[in-house]
Length: 245
Image 1 (tube, rainbow, N blue to C red):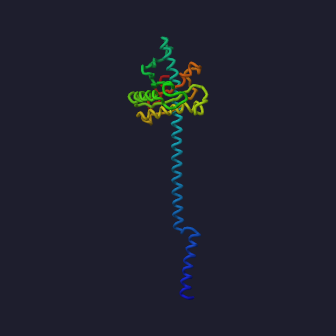
Image 2: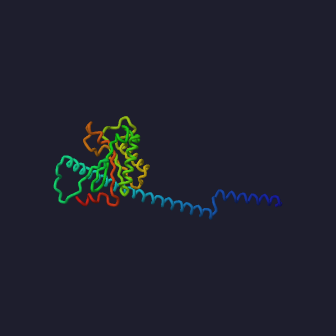
Image 3: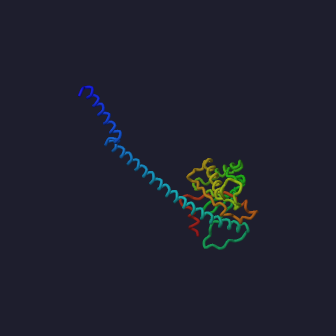
């Protein structure tokens, strides 16, 4: 074989080896590295999934606790309103086994009870009909409310609960009263946070049309369209109320 032929044969052999490498894939070391990379990526995905499962479980627990608290708040509020009505009619309450602190309606609209303080703001004060954006008057009202919360209830959780009447949604963009009540409560929560209330203390909730203060007659529907704000002690939700019953 001539020198030229040997060179050509060598070049052909090198080319053939390179082609085999390309066809068969990576070298053993490169395969091992790829396996290690994929294993590490899989482990990372598992850790992320476990973390998301944990966060979901914690969120579900917080939601269940909030729902339980909201139910208790509504029961306590009903008792408070009954006591205030009795007090306004100069009637003596039914004799209790132990004396309890009577609810007090303050001049600024807040109602104080042994378990929490609350204020109910009519929907018309905050929003235009069928809307969830604060009017200019609503923004002023929320600014004052934020100042009250900051100065008087800085150590409490603030529950913000939306309520509507039972008129079906026809012309506005909302799917139903659940959605409207939720959007209004969320607007108030975000406004309080913008006004300086710590977001970790704010709990947004919604009852839609299902917790009216009065029967939904034409005269009472305006009363049922409202947003309620509860200042609840932290670390022992309604403990005083539970202890005295």
